[in-house]
Structure formats: structure tokens, C-alpha cells
Image 1 (cartoon, rainbow, N blue to C red):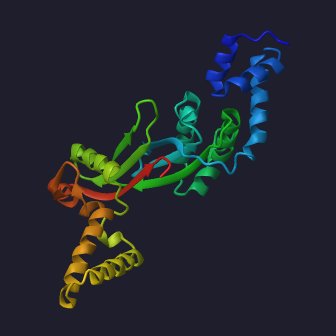
Image 2 (image 1 turned 90 degrees about the vertical axis):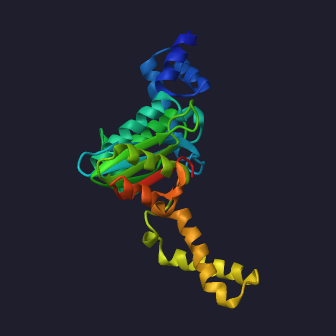
Image 3 (image 1 turned 90 degrees about the horizontal axis):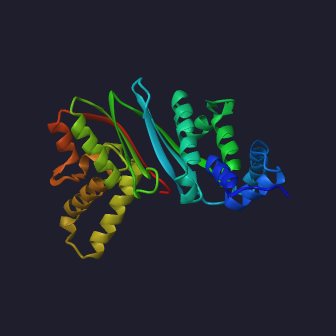
Length: 276
């Protein structure tokens, strides 16, 4: 059996992000040859990719970049454990994936996975690195945000992990400080739409029917129902529409009012939270 040192195991494990036992066994099989051990781990991982297909990926990171042509790209790259998520190998993979997805200006996961990346596609790049990492890795979400200017805010929910919440705000105007504050607000308040007009009619009617039923069951006077229902619908819009929301830094103001006072126009935004 090859004389494999702890230093060799540590060095290869740090390079690849693989498990202690797998790394040691590969080095032993390769008689201490690191290059051969790397290939053994890659082949072993590739065979395991199919077996990992049904595993859940609740960890990972978000990453974003401004593309320089009136667009910015936000991605969520997911994995199985926080150990892998915080490793240099996974973080480096996310950088490579983001660069390729952004270069292709992909607007869907399908387009992103098919985008050129190094010697193949983004999908092939992810599969190859997943084989080394020994975990299921997937590009879960992609968003191409459009705007004149952008504010990118990446939030760490734990100092030991990469960013878990990512926001890209597309806007016009000169107040970058307020734009960043709005991006931070989005990370906290999690709006789904920009304006109340953007909320799908089906969702509005479903909410209207619900609040009307609740209001009737409360025994409110029939004549007062329309006004009460509209008031409660307003509360719904304040939950889901960014410009309707109470501003996180001053709940006496709406986000829309803050944006207007700052001379900004929000054109688009995206928010991803890992695992959500």
C-alpha cells in the first residue's frame, strides 16, 4: 500500500473539496500520485451523479454581476451541504458559472445550462465539478435584470457562509445611495412584484374572494363590504408589490414615495434566497 501522508490528503482535499475518506482512498489507489488520484475521484464522482439526482439541494449561494449593456445577471447555485457551499471549490465554480451565464445573457435556467463555458457548456461544467465535490450541484435560478443603472446587494445570513440572499435593482437616476437602500429593503421585505398593476389578475381575484369571505364571516354590514374588502386588498398589495410596501428604514413612508423623492425610477428587480 502506498505511503500516503496527511499533508497529501489535506492538500488534495483542499484543492478538490472532496471528503476525507474518499480522498485518502483515491491516493492509496493511485500510489500517492495526486494527478491520478484526481482522475479517480472525478470518475467516481461522475458515476455517483445519477445516484444523487433525487437528493435535495437546500444550501448554496447567490451571485450577481453587471453586464455593462443595460443588463445584470443574478444566479442561485445550489448544493447539498453548507460544508461544500462555503468551500473555495464551490465558490470558484459559482464565479465561473456566473461569468458564462452572464456572457450568454441567459434569461432561463435552460438557456443558461446550454451556454458555452470553457471546453463545453455550463451544464457540463457543473456536472464535472459535482463529480469532484461528491454532491448534487444545480443551477436553480437565473434572472436577467434590465435597467439604466444597477444596485447589487448580496447578504450573508452567516459569516461562515457565502451570500444567501441576492438582490439586483435596475433603476434610472443619480441617487446610488438610495438605490442601494432600496436593494437592501428588497432583501428584507421580499416583494414579488414591482407595482400593484404587475400582480396577476388571477392572484388579485383569488385574494379578493378570500378577504370577502372572511369579511362576511365576521358579520360585517353588507353595505360596508366593498370598502372593507378594498382596504384589505390594499394590505395585500403592500405585502407583494415593492412600491406599495412600507419602507424598511421609515415605515411612515412607502417605497414608492422614497423612490420618487430621490428622483429614481425603478425599472426591474430580482431577489433570490438560497433554498427558498
